[in-house]
Length: 134
Length: 469
Image 1 (cartoon, helix red, strand yellow):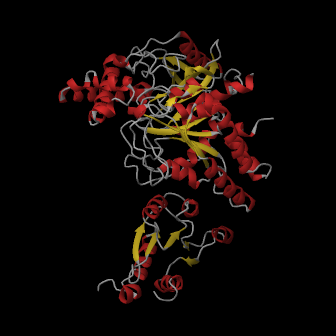
Image 2 (cartoon, chains in turn purple, red):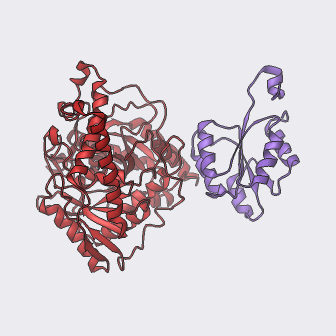
Image 3 (cartoon, chains in turn orange, purple):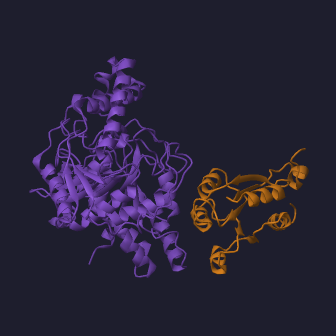
């Protein structure tokens, strides 16, 4: 089975969906390659596209770059968190290093990835989110 | 001291933040106001008493914990019934309308909810939204709080009455020919028809926009910050523009502004002197403050107005002819007559010719404003008309003769607003229309804020009849 993972292989359960929000092509590519073996991955490149995609189908996790091409990542996170259906979705922040710690702490991310994002770091974070099964 | 129901959204945000007021007490005050006015105004299709109280309690908790969803968290809002909300039917003003509760929120309802606004309820509208009147075959007659014998206009009739009556600060209507601006004019409000696609709606349609109707321009700006957020269901929306309407509202200077003034449209109803005088006075005040005002002729021809009338008739004819005879008998006879008396004879070529007049109207409107920063005109050709009338002319064969000042900007996709200027001798509001370049929504709001500051003193908002005895 092309997309077999732990869930699909054992119980026919649905693969979980990860939404990656990054304008940075490198971050997009690393996240996709690190996640796609175990997750259904949707990549969007703007905050506007992120909220539209998340409202259409609630993801299990959102990887969010704080530096987006249209709106600040923090603003897009505010939009997502204020939606009753999306408020509980864990958000993994991707930070470039210029953001201050207070801004990051205020978002209360499920995890923090620093750029340059490595495949191993994304895999470790995803594994943690998935209870160690992904 | 201002009663709680009459506090602006800006005042409420401040009071919630410093904990001097709780959303729970404000919502209770608004619900009491609704109860006092509704037997007279009939602005509401549905009132969400219990749900509003629960939402207010949740908002109060968020403010206590220091995590409000937005400055509008806990601020009461009403939505026109055709702006869908999960759990509410949306009959679109018609007695035979679909009474099945909607299963999801429309974009505006969703954004208002995400901002923490407390939905007080849904406001009335006339049949299919195709009358500029408070008459509806399902909702009955919505009346103007300034004078219950007079019309609110429409089609956002309930929103207009609710705002004038003080059902909280925020109200949203829809506008395809003047349906936000006309009731704003008749009810003494600020009403913004944004650029097409600025506020995501569903379903979108050529010329159709939704916009705030409020007592102050600032409240509308605060609401625009929430409802302009993107929604993928609107396939005609503009790219999201991260403008902070509230932060950018103040500070427009009249000095050097190029203002065009249109007195009469030369089509439709002949304007009454009072509405022209108001527009001229507003332009004069801006000129006195340093603006350069130039009178310009109307860009609208009688053929253009006739074209859009035929276009609307043909559209509604198809809807109404799809009904059974029994169903047709239950919609307002005025509406049935308006859209069937001749539209059945239109050929394809006739409809296309009408559409080309709409295209010409669009081009003419954009060109008319192109040489100016803004254009000012009356909003409607009349100050007022009777509450029981279906249109100012009360003639179904000439039902839209009063939208000549407003309709062009729906199809040119330009932002246009009504802001109250003064009052007639018998105490009825008279608005002026402010039109901007395409997509300059913030500019129109900034000008409206300036006009709000230089206009004559305003009357106190109306009180329900029982309070006057």
